[in-house]
Image 1 (cartoon, rainbow, N blue to C red):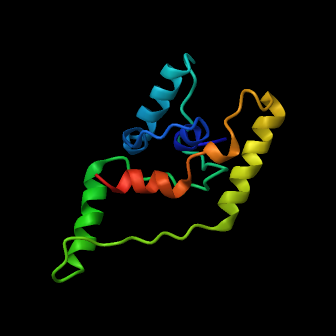
Image 2: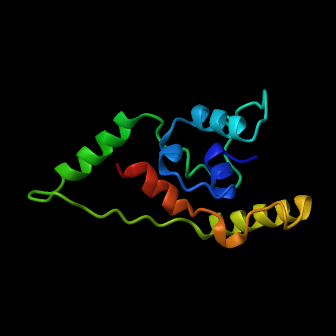
Length: 129
């Protein structure tokens, strides 16, 4: 299965605020938007696409604490850069999931490969105000 944030990625949803919401809230919004009633939230299971990379802290306090710790490491700086390296297997798994969706639903019902939101973009949306 996929986590709710990977569902958003494969639906080509680029609204950063959605990615920053708690996992259960994201899942509720997906079900509401797609009119899927009583679909259980896939909590607890590791996502087979992002390998848990997008299981980000659900509350802003943890993100604020992370940013405060990063800022306190620099002496006189108001800005910093965060470099993220992800395993290549995430891209392979993303392609595999996309091919599975194309095989099951056809190309007309599945978002184009180039339109899937990148994992790094989701992390960027989550960590930036």
